[in-house]
Image 1 (cartoon, rainbow, N blue to C red):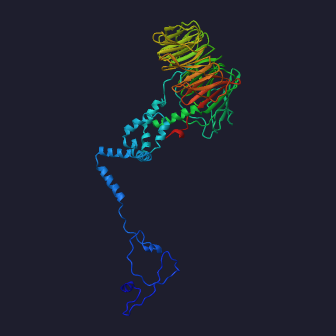
Image 2 (image 1 turned 135 degrees about the horizontal axis):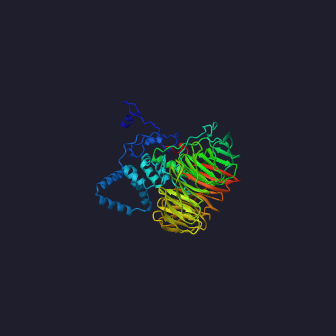
Image 3 (image 1 turned 120 degrees about the vertical axis):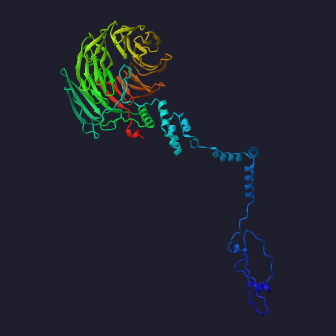
Length: 617
């Protein structure tokens, strides 16, 4: 009865308690079912379970404090004991555990351990070692990808030491403002390209052409680009120049781009590399025609020269055209009576010779003839200059003459050849001449004496190259001979061509030859062997030039082709369609093509210069 009182179900009273009926709800009974029963004796409390009995009534009680997991405790103890073991015992234990693992478990171990073993070398190594590693990378795209890994990698890759090494390996050199003249395939002087200011404004509406020649008139208009496969991305300026000479009217139709980007010197090796890389990419697939000239009268192009300020073209119709470095016509030099077959520019001075047997000296700034030198008795076929005041001319009268172009006097007459002097080259005080008498001769310019006579060819000599030590001669007998300039002895006879070898250029230990058989050959002068044979043209190779990276050839089939000098692979054909190519000359970022089409002479100047905003960093 005390239980009833303690439960609070009955009030505390002195009266004797009466039995009462108490309804009880069971979880498995319907809530509406009730049964009356007499109170049962108390039962022991149930064992504690995960839920109390109130859970079945929708009331969840507060869970007791979490009991410590024996498994976790064991793992913690195992890790602590493992760390306390010596290294040898840890390795033994791990070996035993791994031997007990199956394949899937071992795969999990591999996937878990591999990232833990990876380390970023550039994060732990000093800068000097990182730069040493990058010095073995010769692909710019690899360096560009490496710079995207992290900020640390980008910082290391951006160091100029890395790009300096890459520039040196790829022979990317900054072109100086002034440089010595270099010989080209025809023995021309080829100094580097230097941009001169454009005559057109940015809008392309105002344009004035210097008219220093008194017999030149100019008509200027803005027109649509002419039809051509070469790209013209802006509206060009069309210029028609009229020249009167000896009662004859000569017209030249010219097309220019109004704006040409100035050449800016790179500020770092990284910038230099990007600039040179963009230029090489343009040589592979690109280029922009910045000037085009078409003459109304037919004339064979006999000579083409590039200097840092001028492009000079001579024709067999007695005219000499002078252009700026961008290809803008500034002078047409008239004075020779017949065809001009030899020209030689030096600074602002030009020396020319032709069928009228005269040697003329011109001022390229004004377009005026300074003097006329008489002495030869036949066509002046070749010209060279050894310094700013000394010119050497070779003639079909079998003689050479050394001229002082400051005073107009002939210093020496070099006699010895028995036939026409076809070609000559100059290096320092030494002059080498090649003749139709099958011999080449070595002369002292200052003393005017013969040093050596080179005999060995069986037919006329048409071309030669000379670098001060070695002499290369090309002949109608299809062979090329290499001579010592000091002793006059023949080093080697290079055979392989099947027709006239009329084109030669030599740089260092590399010689490139072009023949009338349509092929071009690259020779290694150390081993005296042919490195590459290029099936260049369907007919004669009329012109060629090469540098450290590429060879450019032109042929009588009307094509201009670019080749990789290291591999000998054909890179591309320039987008020109001509009947015949007379002359081609190029610099790092520009190529000039002189060709014939429909009885008219065409000149195109193609630029490979990148826009400044494309390569400046």
